[in-house]
Amino acid sequence: MGRESATAPEHGLQHGAAERRLVLVVGAVVFVDTMFYAVIAPLLPSLAHELHLSKLSAGLMTASYPLGTLLGSLPGGVLAVRAGPRFTVCTGLALLACSTIAFGFLRSPAALDVARFVEGVGGACSWAGGLAWIVAETPAERRGSMIGRALAAAIAGALFGPVVGTVASATGRPVLFCALAVVAGFLIAQTRSLPSHHAASDQGLGALARVLGRPRVAAGMWLVALPAVASGMINVLGPLRLHRLGAGAAMIGATFLAAAAVEAAVTPAVGSLSDRRGRLVPLRGGLAAATATLLCFTLPDTASLLGALIVLIAAALGAFWAPAMAMLSDAAETHGLEQGLAAALMNLAWAAGQIVGSGGGGAVAKTAGDALPLAAAAGMCAITLTAMVRAPTVLSRVTLSTTEATPPRAGITDQR
Image (cartoon, rainbow, N blue to C red; front, side, top):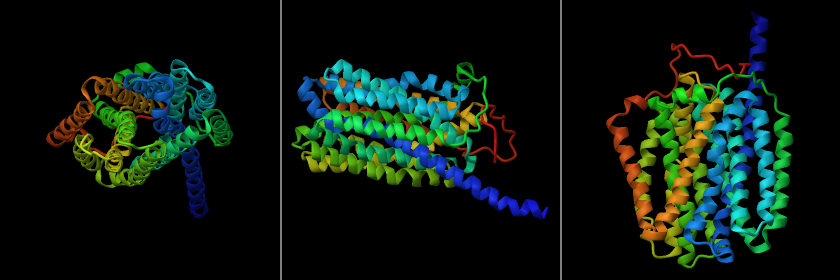
């Protein structure tokens, strides 16, 4: 008994250190992934001028990345379940490195779209493997906080994406993008050094299809997709509108840098709040704030005012990600679904939202102006908030009850 008591604290410290290192490495992976996703914002006006892109074409170039994530989501999730999170993350990083080099050299719109698409497929693999890895090693009562930390790293990557884009617009893309691809190679080495306790599972798309109609799964996916729709619109229409109001690449980059900084500060705090108070508390606040700020998008008549509003929109959307993803992970665990497949659903919802927001928002704005797509996004937030207030019981449970029988997760062996 005394020997067990003596070794328990040491085991706890070792597990805590391993968990921190895992979150650090996965955070670095998603940091790099979102950095290359966000690099397009300050480059978009110059690319539009150089390649004669319309709003629709600019929206399609922005949407190519989430389209790759959309089509790579389910294969990435199955890969995480069958081959393990570590292999899946390394695969995603390899695709990211190759496509980043290509984006630095290519000069035609179609080729750049393909490069962004491959980046999106790599991102789907990185996120599926990384999120499944973190959730498998984290107790349910701390899930929101851990997901929030990883997301904060991802958003911090979005901080540097506009900076990279601004530098690339001044120095040219090839050398800078090739140098940054080396970072992905370094992260592959770090990921391979992490211990992996993966055990093969036979779950696949059939298991995923069986839970799609469950209310909490569907609600979690919608609450991931909704802020993705809004952010997709802002990522396309924001830089173009700022440019029309006189902002240059540096100011556009600074605006999205500030927006990402605020969102990175909000996200881990919101994730921790959702662990303590329930997933719905921050989600309600985010829905209310997003409704108000999105409706105001076309009101500012100066670049500085519009930039400030974009920062406020980012803060509102930051209240969604961690609680919505934790809700989806909770629901998957309730129904015995592997977390790799749950991460695939997160990727699927995010990518679908981004495609609708960036591609659809750009198309609608081209024919009807910027106000209509942003008002539609605000309306979706308002309707969701109303539904959540009127019928919250289906979403109210935060984590599994300690007395509830939990189906085993076949794909991850518990080493704690």
